[in-house]
Length: 222
Image (cartoon, one colour):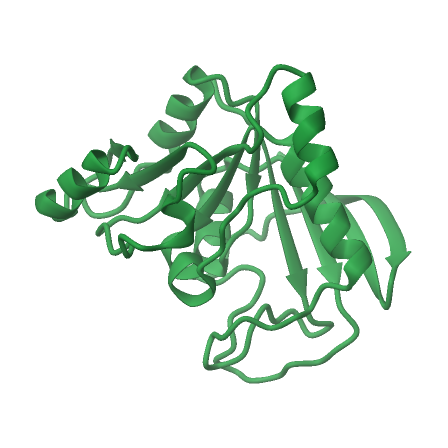
């Protein structure tokens, strides 16, 4: 068993989520940022790859006080569980995602440095170990499901998006296309990695103009 899982990503019109330097770009408009906050509030867990943590240092919490109060009223924690996929355990010990504002799980492989793993556990971080060279994502999502995670939000980056799709662990994708073109043959796209053969087919289940861009919602066809 696994959670219902969706990817949420903001992209330029040409499919880029950053530039060659992989620095954080402001692609989303204010309306889209509020939508993302609502998606976080509805989710049981938020998953990112270590690349996102190293480049953006996100906190991955619900920003709206009203939405946090709603979660509490529903008998849930203020914020969803934060999950970092980090095969070699490269996460900095001062990363914002490791603060005390939400439960955090760092998923590592057997390549992870044992001293770093122990340091994280002393900080109160739940370290999940599965996989030899890379994190076993199927084992991870099963673990999350058994913890009570029924809705999992994946916020990238491109490598994690690719890995989750490759393993058949994604149900839907939200892509917000901002009003810009980034360019760059080495700029990360919505999904990196090797190409899928055959391509993964999607069904468009929603499209709307949002701010200065367009929000699309897709269902993965099995």
